[in-house]
Image 1: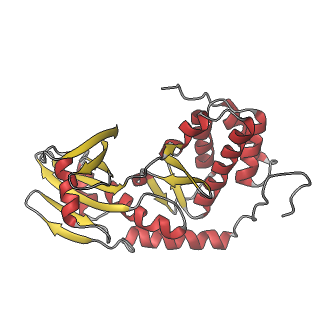
Image 2: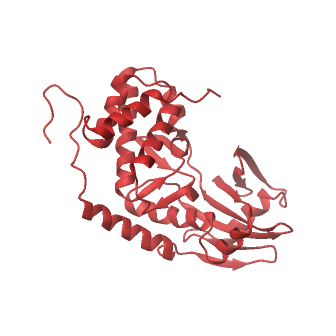
Length: 288
């Protein structure tokens, strides 16, 4: 694609062929649902069963669980949001993200036995997405603790220091040009995730950004919501565009047009008009 004279927008590669997209979906789906590519060491303790990623020890995962449950007096915890904490165990300089997946219904027990629960999906996604060039915090370990209410699952991943949620960073931008570029950059990442067969149902609040020497990095989190090989239909795409509009604050017509071109690589057509309607007509989220 040739750049227009005087334009600072980089030229974009053409969309991948249908065969390329199908191949990406199939490869991701097979590895994901068969549980491939997620090596772990396992250990069974009286109070829990744990598995640890290749670079970590099962005992560390057990220690994180003990701190989370208040059974270990040494360690620091910090609430992040619902059922999510950051833990720094005693003797460790590193901090870890720790998420709880409680038993909510009988089907949860079946999913756990078949290793396709929400925790299992997040565990596999944390291993597979980096191999596709998609940034996500590295897996540390997983734990299953049995209690009176049944089994509760936990997932530990590496903590991403100095990361800021996308919508928080965007709302702090005052330059119109910088804001428009961030919106376009997000749309290009969204297109790439979709082209790789990755669909994240709850989008914007689960994307973290971090500055790096090469530019702004975009990291996917909350991977239990990942849906590999789920076809991105017109309805799902419009749903994600409404999410972007809701969390980005009021969008101008110029910003909406730039987002559409960055994702669709064109500004005309029925889908482009529908997305523009979603971007401009969705009320923004309330400020915290």
